[in-house]
Length: 403
Image (tube, rainbow, N blue to C red; front, top):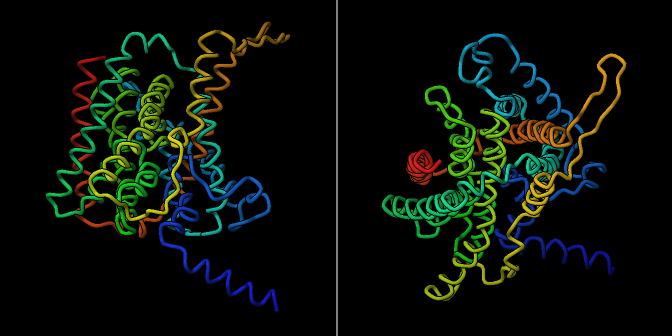
C-alpha cells in the first residue's frame, strides 16, 4: 500500500511544477544548446541511452562534420573561389550546421537529440578552452580598453534598442527587456538566467528564446556573407563577429570562416560578453526589487553571481596564459624520411578546437526544427532583427575606427 500511495503523490508533484520549473529542469538543453553551457544529460546518461538512442546522434553529427569538410574542399564555387580574398568562403562549421539543419528537417528523428545534446554540452566548452591557447595577449595591450568600451557600449545599445523598439511594437516590458538581454549577452542562456528576476512569465520566455535563436542564426550567416563584399583583417572581423552575433558557437563558426586568428579574437570578445552576464542579472534583480517590489517567480533560487559565469571561460583564460608564457611544448620526432618533425602543442589544440566545433555545429543543426523555431511572434521577431541590425552596423563602424 505504501508504494501505491507514493506513486500518485509523485505524479501529483510533477504536475504541480510551474512551467518555469519544468522549463528550467527539462528544456534548457534543447532551447539553449547553442551556448554549450546547459544540459539535462550527463555523459552517463548518454552511455546508458537515457533520452533516446544517443550514439545515433553522436555518429550522425560526426558523419555530417566529415561530409562538410570534404564538401568545403570541392574545387568549384561556392566551396572554392580561386583568387578571392577567402578561397573557401563557406567555412566547414557553416556547412556542418547547414547540413545538420537539412537532415533534421528531412528526417526528423527525435532519437538523435540525446547524443546531440551531449555533444553541445561538452564539445563546445572544450573547443572554447582550446582556442585560448592561440590568443596573442599582445593584442589586449594594444586595443584592450578601446575594445572593452565598444563591447559594453554595444551591450547597452542592444538592451536599449530592443526595449524601445519592442515597446513601440506593443510588446510587454518583460519581453522587450529579455530580447535585449539575449541579444546583448549570450542568447537564450542569458534569457533563462535573467527571467526569474525580471518578472517575466512563461510566454515571455518562450517567445524571446525562439526569436534570439533564430536571429542568432541569421546573424551568423549574414556576417559571413559580408566577407564576400567587404575586406576584413582577422582582428577586425573576429571582433565584429564577437560583438554582434548572439551565441558562442555561432560566433566562433563565423570567425573561423575567415581564419583561425579571427576565430580566436571572436571567442575572446564573445566571452567578455558572457562574463558580463553576472552584473546584468544583479542589476536586473536590483531594479525589479526596487521598482516592481516583486517578480513572477519569487521562489526562484538565488545564485552566487560567479555561478552565472560559465566554467569554460576560466579554462580559456588559463590556456591563454599558459600559451603566452611558453609553457605549451613543441614536440620533436625523428623521422627517417623527413628528419626532425616538430609539432606545436598550440597547433594541436587549435586543430582539436576546430574539429570539436565542426562536430558541435553539426549537432546544433540536427536539433533545429523549422516548424518550432518559426512559431515566434512577428512583432518580437521584428524587434530582434532591428536590434541586431542597429548593433551590428554601429559595432562595425566603431571597430573600423578603433582597430
